[in-house]
Image 1: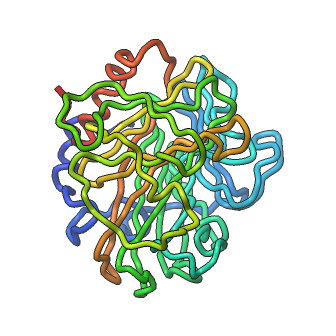
Image 2 (image 1 turned 45 degrees about the vertical axis):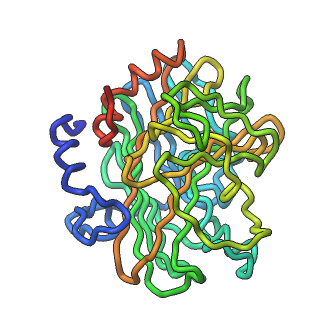
Image 3 (image 1 turned 30 degrees about the vertical axis):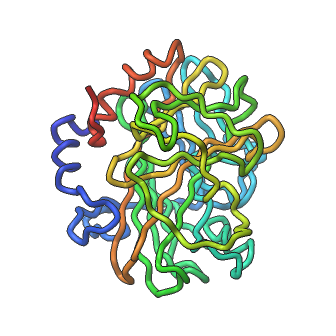
Length: 337
């Protein structure tokens, strides 16, 4: 049963400083030993609730009637469908809410290391009929241990909880860069939509249509108070990460539209998530609607946490999407009028 709204808010208030607190309540099997689970040998699990069906997959290849032609390396939600839209939102061979990169702003480790979440061993842990986790032991290079929980709430909203613990001091610039990608299958428009303003100007929030002309150009949108600078190579290979747009978002959520449906991604304000996009991240005609978490001044052995929610709903207008998402945004601690 979905947690009540008051319970969600209480949990949120007890876990304010997401990327620095040692006293945040552990949610996943990474650090909460009261969680029980079974390990899945199939590499995927089907979650159904409300009008939504989500198929969560680890980073193994799957090729059957449930996930035909799904490629190795793309963990997360391999298929997302709705009673009103049976077509998979995501590129079938790839995934959405996909744990893509661990980095420290340097190219030295090499491309495979920057994509280490794709390569390192994962375990699919089934918590219950509506909740699964992807557990990754300390990775070979970065030594980052993590658990990524996907829970389908009773209205079909996905709550994604990520927890990680760095086990060694492997990050050259004392910060941990993390990146999630959602590869959208042939939408009519590659753009994303959020409420924000022009960077460097004192303006009231308005609807911004986020457009990026090419991969890695004007790709990342920051919050108004995110003035953090992270040292990185001038030619850092992950071009989406540090290439900023001309906008700032005022509210930490955004959506894109595909085949009459809106895909909404919502975040906690204190996580200072950076929104990223690419017109071709999933191949020709397949944009990527992404986000990043930057953890500065990390400590070995410290647990860090991110919580976000995603909705997949029929689309009518930006205002309708805003109404539909309101309660979930409040639950995440956003300042909603």
